Length: 392
Image (cartoon, rainbow, N blue to C red):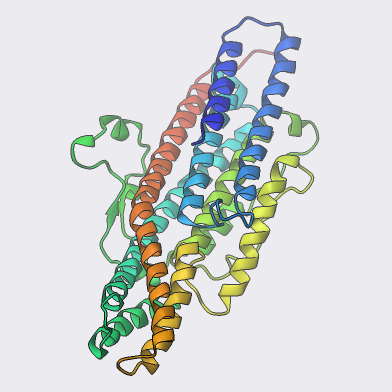
């Protein structure tokens, strides 16, 4: 993450830690708590504003839904999640988060967290499918880099590119990889704390997606009861819970839109975002851009909006047209054009080679962070349930 973002987060978390350990009057504590809640919302708005501004048509910026942009999105999610826990949990009496409306809102957030684990699984599986597409593109690049081009090389490239484009035009491309994945630690990096922190959802850590599982239905279930706090609740702890729920749903929705996932029909439908709240404005801007791209591709049946995949599809179709009309030795002008397209396709493959594995690692980190945070909240709620009922 950028140094300024990291510094802002560190100072924010340190500030809350110091305050919660100080002895303050009730009035002063309330005023400072309101200030912390406002600052948390401002940080969320700033983070998504940075993500929105980076999608502007600037050659030096990361394109919307590119691998690099998705990695930034996950970085920002992890920062938001850390600050959310600091605001709601750090140094707080367990009885405070067991009172209405948190006694209802927190279990709803924890339920969304469980659903997000399945989305993380599906996205990681989808990234494996993207790697398969990358390998097909690499076969075509290797074949078309030969000079002079012959009929054999062109036929080999066409076969790989035809398979690539066909896979990208079917909504079940994410099923193209059948091996199961596991988010458990590998090799010597085994973390014994992972097992200790894990709640009773071990099934999510080693999996294959069920045949009837639907990414679109999962996102819909996560957003179905998402409603902004009203009245006095809008200035209390209900607000950060709502903010974090919205961030979680938005991030999972974006990942499913970008990466091939099982059963995504209807995903282009907006889920509600509060236009009256400033922190949500950049998120709304991003949502509108993604929905616009989704509508363009939905009619064609494209499996994902990942920017590298979109460019790969266009180049693949153009090179297939070249292969269909190729006659040895080929026209010089057309061969020069093809050479540039092959170089561009090779650059995309390089970006995928460098970026897909780190992106999968971030998905794994998000998965484990969600599991740990859910456990922490369950522990506090359990403690609150064991507190003696105050006498009237």
